[in-house]
Image (tube, rainbow, N blue to C red; front, side):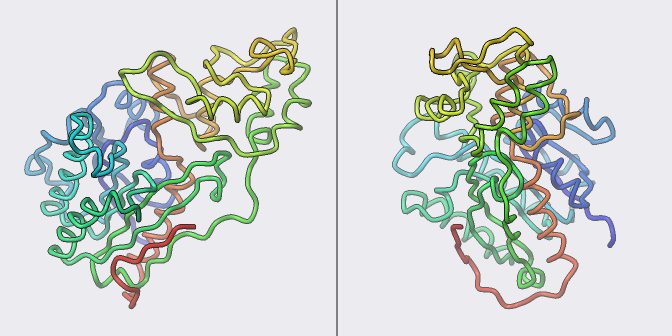
Length: 335
């Protein structure tokens, strides 16, 4: 199959781009406005062309290589519902979504992938946003499909639902099929057992044997929040049931002398590291995330899991390589 190319917007730590690469796509340009994610991308893929710039200030006319690419992908900051549009902190997310659609006008990719909150797919509060997207895409001759996936169904040891919009030029859309979920899920214990035992922790086997569920959703937080932690109160309770202290992120995995006694409270629980958080997002162990601990954790928490990107990329690639079909426009499904 011939090589296909893509542009990735708000690329972050590279989770979506990495998955698309694994599906056989080659990036021609990756954009992010923050320095730490750009450092991460350059450290892991020095041959990729990474541009540190704000999407709202990006001028496609200066980058001719992005025109007529096979795919425009965007893991955008999470939009808020129309009930919140009066709040100033919703403006930036909506402007980025609008900028992505306007860039489609200029670039004319053969396909479009936007990843965001699950509610964007079908929640009534997001209907004005969906209407805006529908009008823009129909004007440009795209057909599209909304659906929700759970990363846990694609080999990611985490309960992480993602709202997705896939759009393709009309002649390709009929061949698109959402990726099929895997039959078995990977547990936290299976994913982290090896790393927990790296420094000789004697309870690594016992801990892994009881961590039999997938992780709750990792939350990256924002620049306005404090240090790194695994999420809000409900999420921390879920971690506590696996003997993990979710109120902080450790600098290293436990050593041989650490006594795991979760019944005694937080101080008897094990803590996760940023590298382990990356494993829970489906990043390979050799993927290096740049920056200090909090900056690293935020990149990881905000990332789109690479295995999901690979599954979506494979489905899009298959559709682009096949004749079109007859699926209905705007189809919505929520597994």
